[in-house]
Length: 329
Ligand code: ATP
Ligand code: LTN
Image (tube, rainbow, N blue to C red; front, side):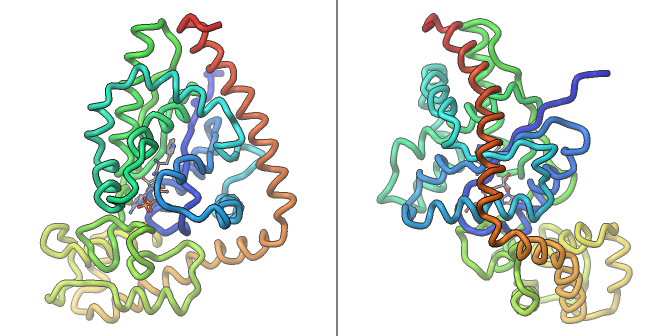
């Protein structure tokens, strides 16, 4: 039997999971579980690079673990763990940093955007963020990294770092590939459909995976649309409607032309009411599963501890190999 592919990805424990995170990343993570060896991480160390509250960090990590499980990650099949529980991540970050030109870090879009947003806290961690992400991926000899479109530049840099390291120090790392979903790799904001849906860009611009029906309805009815009245997919001229059609299509598993046909000669209001109803129904199992898991924190902590042990064993093998190849051990 051919060897299974290894899949690695992560989400920060900042903010709540929104449908952009779900359609761009988590949904792919869940489907990979059937056919690959999956490792999914809560990247708490990455979340320290912007202003945050140390008092609430622990709770947010637990919330993210609950969210992973409620969304459909299965700890029987998949390793789920917290990044800071496996020290190899920070150690490999240092080793990789000597194979990473500063200029490559300075040209990262996320670095530029986050520096602009947080001008009083442009710390070295924010610049080095992609090296830590490269360490996350490379430690597990990862074949596939399922992410949303905004992360492709970081995975590309990971590949460059790995290639440079392998060339200079000898074959050490598998070269990973980005996998984007065919549709939904970039879900747009409900308020400004030219920008990606982002949890740091305000509550009303996102629908959260565990959102209650009333607020789903309110947000969809208030979503930004253009001044026309046709329900037609046109990314450039009707970005708001195009985004809502994409969301409708992905949650109903129906093609966009079929949905356009159904809503031909119907108003934006009718379309939005139906979309809200669809989301309320489709997100219901997630809300229910989350409620079931709340109160089971001890059990979830055991899952994370076991995950960290299993992850640590794999990570340490790669770390030792990297150190040896660099002449350290
Ligand atoms: P922020 O924008 O506040 O930095 P985020 O909402 O982008 O956070 P992350 O934790 O950085 O969330 O991303 C987790 C995963 O979700 C990544 O794989 C990312 O590519 C994906 N993702 C984030 N936003 C979207 C989106 N709008 N559409 C599709 N995928 C997305
Ligand atoms: N930078 C990513 C989170 C992340 C990640 C990773 C994703 C950290 N390490 C490794 C895939 C693989 C983000 O979503 N903002």
